[in-house]
Length: 287
Image 1 (cartoon, helix red, strand yellow):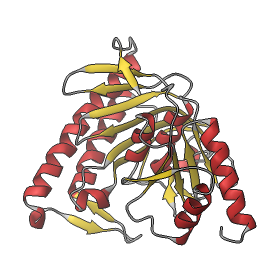
Image 2 (cartoon, rainbow, N blue to C red; image 1 turned 90 degrees about the vertical axis):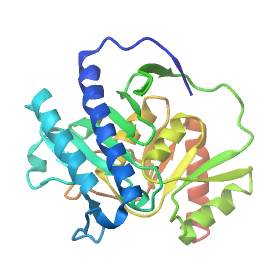
Image 3 (cartoon, helix red, strand yellow; image 1 turned 120 degrees about the vertical axis):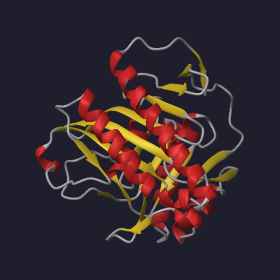
Image 4 (tube, one colour; image 1 turned 90 degrees about the horizontal axis):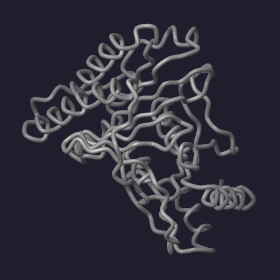
């Protein structure tokens, strides 16, 4: 939930919003172009068999260049960049210039820009932008996050909803068809009403901030640039993102940028519900 507020008086936030607002417009235009003439749109397949489009690359080039001008001493660890030197960096930007390329290609506007500033494994500052809506969620990990509507140039700050929830809203990806998701839902349904909510990419983290999703489980792999910004934003509102062994993710400190499964939660209550259900899955031999 968000309520109107004055613009933050913070030069760092101003710089980031300027960059990401421009990147939002780039991706919005690319999406419109793709929807009108997808057969002429450049799409390639990377070595990991995932797609990358001209939109990913344009957004990446713009954001990396803009960050280089504003923060020249901070390298950028991007999905679409060279990551060979990353373990030499104690502090860096972590970037996915278009998270949800598959959603983009299916003409679903549920794609995002993910950007976070990390140091010694910790997420310090997080941004998730929704180009199709020209909305930006951002903030420091230990402060309430902001929501910026660039079309109307309006700022809002986060306020937790006090309304009691009747259902547990479970965030799932469109392709969450593996048995683990069904098993988790079955266990959760034994004690409460569960409503599945399907959405793509890191957009689910935005929906969590908006009160539309309470719990987001993930049993299939992601990468660090998929989760860092979401984790930072959730931690700033009293939630979080943990491994299936209940440990918070740390970033750019492992041999790989691949993540294991995770649980993202909006509150300590939903964290407890999720961990209990996961424990029951393991005891029954499901997980």
